[in-house]
Length: 322
Image (cartoon, rainbow, N blue to C red; front, side, top):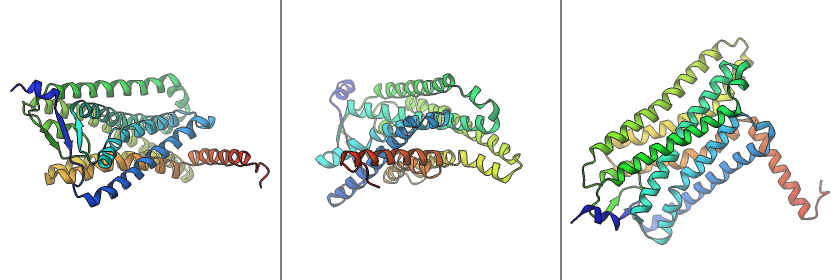
């Protein structure tokens, strides 16, 4: 038997959360609700930033990019899981699994890069306020986002190419709700040592590097805030980066929780549940965190809602309604 020939017709089973039939409608409804909230909330952020000229600044440019990536991030996994529950099928093709893994790795790393870029933006704004608009010019902002996309795409392409070289000898079950790269590598029947080396090296360089950059930026921000004499100025400086710090903490803590819980308990089920936090919950909470803690976003959203209500009343013939 040639493993290469087997790979061409290979299919995987995504076991998901539970095989109990009575729980499937509950899981379907819960994840459909979270997915719709994620898409709708992040689209509102993008709409608010694009429609309000006051928000055409580097910080909100990066925020709108983060919202777009979060929509794509959840869209790589949740729709397929919902489809499987609805059709009562756990099957995903080999090609579909590799494609899902590619885009998942792409948007996960891109999320980390954008959070790092946003930390750098807050560092320049607070530590070098007089030179902020000169340093964070449109060309640099566009370049930072472009480089983030390129590096994420190259890393994802490398990880996918490394998985493509593996041989899968039989009909395999993935104890997850999506094709997570670590789970996929463990199912290979060929030598996976090189894959693990590349995977963990990339995680250390990209993930560790971005996290180090965020810590460095905020260490400088904290020391700069402490030198501000007025309490009002100190509060204003901190409030500008509080939302971003909340998202960073939530994203990285849940990511660490996934791998630490997996290593400690060796339970695939606990790993699946923990994965929900950074793949579904964090992108869903981002719009709430930014909108509730950011007065500019709230004002922009209020203007959008007001215009929508006025337009609706006009269509209904209630233009002069008080």
